[in-house]
Amino acid sequence: MIDSIDNVSNAILTDFYQLSMAYGFWKSGMDKKETVFHLFFRRAPFQGNYCISCGLENVISFIDTLHFSSEDLDYLSSLEGNDGKPLFEQGFLDYLSNLEFNCDIDAVPEGTVVFPLEPVIRIKGPVIQCQLLETPLLNLMNFPTLIATKAARICRAAQGDPVLEFGLRRAQGIDGAITASRSAFIGGCNATSNVLAGKRYGIPVRGTIAHSWVMAFDDELEAFETYSNIMPNDCVLLVDTYSTIDGIKKAIETGKKLKKKGYELGGIRLDSGDLAYLSTKAREMLDEAGFKDARIVASNDLDETIIQSLKFQQAKIDVWGVGTKLVTAYNQPALDGVYKLSAIRNPGGEWEYKIKISEQSVKVTTPGVHQVRRYIRDNQYIGDVIYDINTDMEEGCLMIDPFDMTRQKHIEAGVPHKDLLVPIYDKGVLVYHRPTILEIKEKVKQEIASFHPTIMRLINPHNYPVGNEKSLNDLKIDLTLKARKKKSLR
Image 1 (cartoon, rainbow, N blue to C red):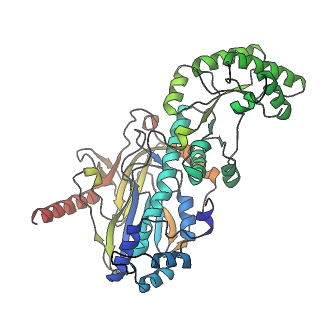
Image 2 (cartoon, one colour):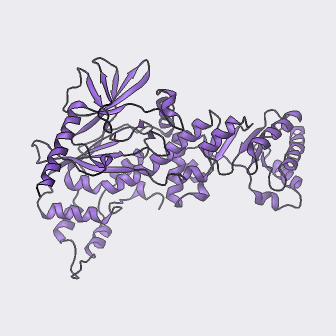
Image 3 (tube, rainbow, N blue to C red):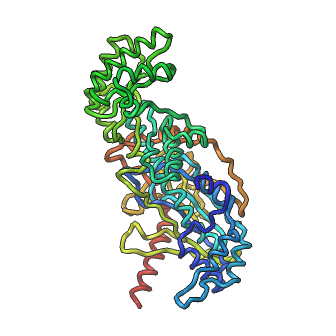
């Protein structure tokens, strides 16, 4: 179950309508057509304005094992329509059995800061292959990106203090827990309580003791001393099982006995109560007893808002253990990620650009074959332009806000820049150097540091300039007007 994406095909990890459409393309003779799809998100989560792109590693693992097994095909052949006859012809199943992935995929590397409507992945290739990738790619990108973004926000609130991911027991199943641990580490967390994730991804593992350890003994002091004898080199004591202040006193007593044996008390953990008051009181008590290096770890349903408030109150907390509200993205259950067709053609022909119309402006898609150019001035990112790859950008450009066309920004020629989408697959061949998880984590730090701090603000962040290049914006308006006119004539 956990290792399936790495070791076997998950070709039928898809919504049923993807297979129905694939069958329709095959049956109607459209299977030779080439298409371009873009994966992007419409709105930023957590009332912020950005996301940390995450999940590309699992996308690569999925595609590298993509094939329809005999068991998959046997299952599909057993599906029946309302008339009791097979839904799919044998010829289509034979087609799937011989399917070889040969698309071009460009994507932003994991750890890149991205904004609404910017393509995170661009897929170009045969229509059936592109269509069959929709559901799995959204599944593999939406949740990791959501968690990495949440982790980045929490770590920003912690202002450089270590943040531990403690969410395994509250995560959405085994795969959700493993994915959350990896994504949270990429987003900035220092360690996880999830031992399997630690083994699998090389993430440091951390933990203290639970209340059950203390409750298993007749006396709290006995529980502490027993644990300190067993784990003298990693002794962090949970002090709130009965009375927090009394628990701190007993932890200090235990620490003095540890010191006589040549060890240091690692710290204490607070898991309930007024964390601002208790951490301040604990710091005073520990310092007075000579344990100035003992860390105070706090848990108890923390998120970025609570951590920011505790920081404002000058709580004396050194390490933050964050669980439920991180791994479940507690206040934002899903990322608004979508996967939309933007161009189609006969092999070798001219692209016919496509647009989806909606009464909601955010759901009107942008036609074309897109790239994102990020401009840089004085080592700081100053704006992103979404443009069609056939557009000459060397003479500068005019960026137009897709939500307000009166908001425009001119980028002159010669401004340093980088294009965000990089080649991942070239006609089905992996051409991307896969970075380590530590390299991805470091990229997140560098990315965040390259934006003005107001962009990263947790509440009411400043809007970072993102827009369509003028000719792309004009094309979108033109196709929108034509589509609306066509609709009105019916």
